[in-house]
Length: 186
Image 1 (cartoon, rainbow, N blue to C red):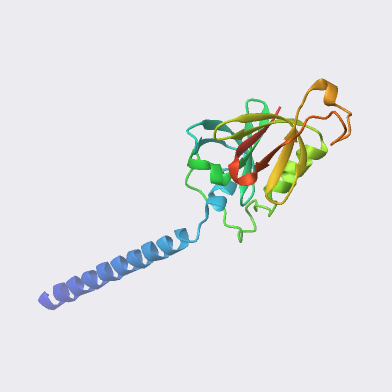
Image 2 (cartoon, one colour; image 1 turned 90 degrees about the horizontal axis):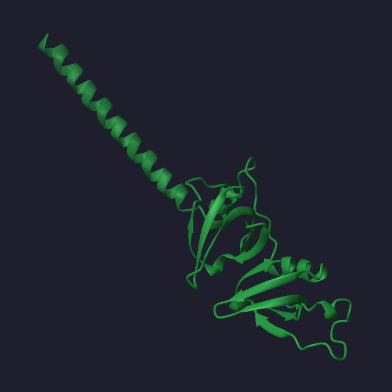
C-alpha cells in the first residue's frame, strides 16, 4: 500500500511539473507572438469602431475609425472625414485588445496607400479642407501635392473655376507633410 501511495504521489508531481512547463511554454509563445504585432495591426482590428486619438499638440479627436493604412488613418468625426497621419497621435484609446496581423487572411488587411494619394484625391475633387498644423489652421483647396509637401490656396467662392496659378489668384501656402497634424474635409 505504501508503494502505491508513493507511486501516485510521484505521478502527481510529474503531472504538475509537466503542466507548469506547458503553461510556461504557452506564455513564452504568447509573448513572442505579441512582440510581432504592429500598431497598424491593432488599428486594423479596431476599424469600424469608436476611437479617441490624443494628438501631439494636446488636441483630441474622437470618431469612427473608417480606414487604416500604415502611415495614416481615416476618421469619421462629427459628419466630416479626417485624414490623420499616425505620427500625429501621441496616444490611442478605444482600440481594444485585438489585433489583425497582415498575414491573417480572415482579417481586413491594411493597404499600402500613402497619405499623398489621399491628399491628391482631395485636390482632384477641389474639396475645401482645413489643414491643421501645431500652430495654425489653413482653410482652402489643395492645389498641389508633392512627395513631401502640399500647397493649399484660398477657398473663396470667387476662386472657384479660376485656373490654378492664374493671374490674380492668391499665392498658395506650402506645407511640408512633417508639419501637418491632420486634414479635415469640410
